Every structure is written in structure tokens, then in C-alpha cells.
Length: 297
Image (cartoon, rainbow, N blue to C red; front, side, top):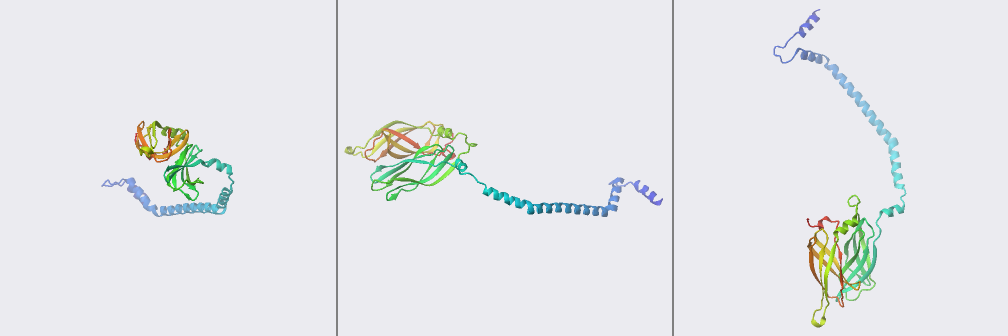
């Protein structure tokens, strides 16, 4: 009876400071009375959770070590032993370059130009080659060149010192670094190249050397027009001098800051004996896939 009256009085108690309600006081009293029990329940719950998770982890790791790891090793071994046909590999690999027409030309007394025609039949592979020419008793210095997809271009070493006409001339590729042009990046490499390699030769004037008047050099004058929509910081070319459809000589040419639709007047000289030129052909050496070669639009 006394306890009941005390509880009723406790429920009727009002805090004179009004900092907490009678309900808050009841909750605090209940927490203090059950604090130890709550702590035991929390410890038991955490212990049960730890036992369950650790047991699951041990079971999973045990299964992997006993069963799955052996199966993974078998899969790796089967991948290594899987036979891939040589035809499948060859279909994905680039085709070899086609080399033809390896020749030399007299550039001047005791200097010779070496030339080889190289064709890249791959429509999506560009290649950077390191090469040299060999001849009976010697070899030229090494050269490098970019062969674009589908390109048929000449590779040269110009002005090689030699006191005699070279014989037994051959062309050797020392190193070839292939790069595939992704269809996702460039759907049509041929069109991409064609849009950028558009140079036209106009108004050729050939003045042959005349020893009787002490003009011992041949003069080849012509205009080059950049017909493309692209401007180049530096446009490099190998110039082929042609006579009656046959290459009669070679010369290097560099045009700096060659703008779109611009015309440049060029004059080249040659000390080659008996040179005749009725046509000039430009062999561009520009890597159109290198974004740094282009001037801003």
C-alpha cells in the first residue's frame, strides 16, 4: 500500500524548474534500473553476430581453398593450353610491307641517292620503320620513315658518300613499329588521309646545266599548291624528278608554315650529270595522324 502511494506521488511530481517532464523522469528511472540488463543483452547480441559472421567467413574461405582454388588453377591451365589457329593470328596481324624497285642515282660527284618503293597494303595499320641500304662492300646510314595505311611511297637515303657506283644494292628493314588505327576512332582512314594529302605541282621550268657557260648546276623551278583545308607547321617531301615516265633524280624539300590553299614557288638545284626533268612528283612525308603537325584553323 505504501509503495503504491509512493508511485502515485512520484507520477504526480512536477519539476519546479520545468527542465524536464515527469515522463522523462520515468524513462530515466527505468534506464537506471535496467542498465545492467541492457548491457548484457548488447554483449550477447554482438557476440552472436561475431560468431555468425566469422563462421560464414571461415566456411567461404575453406570452400575456396579446398574446392574453388583447384578449379581456378584448372581454368588457368586450360586457357594456357587452348589452341589458337595460326590463320586466326595472321588474320589479325598486319601484312608485311612490299618492297620493290631498289635503285641508286648519282646525286653529284662521289655522292649517290638510294631509293626503294615500299607499299603498305594494310588499310588500318600505319608503321614506323628504321631501315638502311646495303651494297657490295658497305652500307648507308640508318633512316626512319612513316608508311601510312594503304600508302605506296618511296624510301630514300640521299647524298651518301661513295667514290664509285654502288653495286649489289639491297634494302633492309631493321625495325618496324606497327600501330593499328581503331575503327571506333577513325571509321575511314583512306578518306582521312586523302582529305589531308592534297598537294599540286604547277608551272615546271627545267634549266639544264650548261658547262660551256659555267652553269654546272641543273635548276628545277615549280610551284606547289596546298589544295587541302589543312595548314601545316612543316610539310616535308621527297621530290622525284621524272623524265619520260622514269625517275631520274631525287631531292628533299621542306615547306614551313604551309597554309591551306597557299602557293609556294620552289627552286631546286642538282649537280647530277645528264639530268633531264619533264615532270616533278611530290612524295609527302607528313604523318597526318600526328595532331602536332597542323596549324590552328
